[in-house]
Length: 231
Ligand SMILES: C[S@@+](CC[C@H](N)C(=O)[O-])C[C@H]1O[C@@H](n2cnc3c(N)ncnc32)[C@H](O)[C@@H]1O
Image (cartoon, rainbow, N blue to C red; front, side):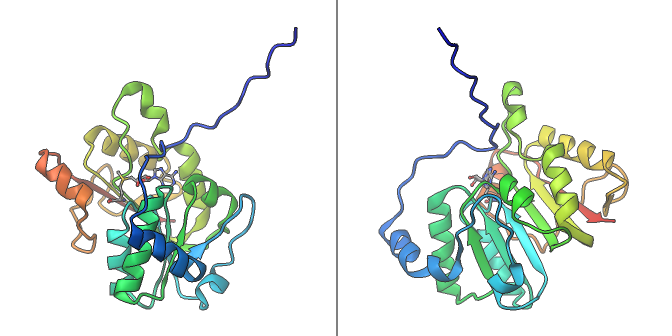
């Protein structure tokens, strides 16, 4: 009898959480997705200037959750474009509602695995900055392989962030913060630590406060920021 072929399932940085869309989110999907959503297909290159209708610099947030930071940043900086990628559908719905509430025109949303979009959808040096705020910490040793910031993602970041562009990460999980710092420090031919060698960046006022950060603070976790410039 033939052995079944082994299935190669990629290791994902997320497990899709259940969660229904609220009625308002479902309406937002119907009404707003055609204008603000990006129906990306694996392998397809994204034309950012066409998507935004201008050639303003583009900043990406990976895993925006409910989109609180992204909506706030987009409303503070109308001369910049913001792209959000998130796998959690209710989070996408929440952000669509926020786009409508704030009347934003400079934000687009992609509902997909960010690792794939970075590798297959974004052109070299197409982004002015990338944010990774409070990525899932995967605290158990056996789950560390699920952490999104690995050398694979770092290679994509180095490719898509333009020279002098920024990578800004924040986490309230100290061991993950140290792992990120080590990984980025190791890539010092590509990225420069704006806090100085081996240091975390003091919390910048420019980073909006999210519920994840507030929760971390309540649990007594220290929040660490890492800001690196692409060489
Ligand atoms: C802990 S939450 C933080 C959300 C938000 N950045 C904040 O600070 O409030 C992490 C988010 O990353 C999303 N996520 C994890 N892996 C992802 C991936 N590969 N692509 C897109 N989103 C991802 C999860 O669905 C989750 O919403």
